Length: 405
Image 1: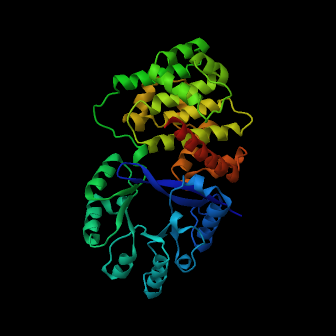
Image 2: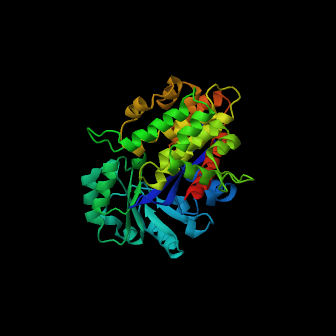
């Protein structure tokens, strides 16, 4: 029997702030298609999310977009209407009965979104009921999206661009008039020909290289961090926050290293140096934290693995550096001069550490159909544990963001 696994995909506003999440679900059954379809599957994910899981924490108290099939339009689950945006799937036949069902939902206070919508003049009654229209940018292209907006401009709706894959796509969609966005554009670097790593970015990379040097000792780490007053202040602020909940106040980097240990300080200093080095949306830090922490948690579940879990955490951070610095990951690795095994994990070799990191990345991006469940099962990681690790990573990340903001 397959399990319905849950992940979330952020929905952003024009300032790249997260305003909602789409809840996505997949089957972990390796013997069948990974994408779950049908009314029972949708009911399962809603029941699981809103009754068995800490849904408020998973959603960070934001609305959830959930796909509705035809039957669910007639019998929606009994959940708080303020938490739910009903996504009407594009393959549902629009007829009189369907319009009546959507009208009832609208009258009850539900927010209605049309998923992957392409204009059809015969849908006038449905469009009058819609609050949000999602347009698949990858399917229609930028020119096609512009045409769709013109055709739909008579309706009082929010336009959401989905499958926005690049920063350029985001800018163009924003210019067209979209005010909500969904896709992987935030995690993609904006590669500009001839752009070089700046002096400030090189300073961050040099610090991260020192932190990851297996030969550097306690005093070397302390000196490297203390040489950066801003980093020292932020690290001490974090260590003394409720996130760590230490009994006594830590007032020096040396004491922080003593209390938390060298490996943890390497990870935390690298994290703070990276996420505070450039002005990027907080949402990018959220995505980076989820993947890094989840990879670490998966590693901690394995008894025999030479690659330490703290290094897995750092590897997760480094896989996001291209999005932070807007240069290729290969160029960043050339500057970092990391140990070969770390580079191999980051670039996705065939080993277990790379498998765990890739799993975390796929969950963070809600691409659960890309997870290699067979390999995870072979090393003793169940789908239930993997999902629990993801949910714990979401919780952990929210705590971290609260501590540093």
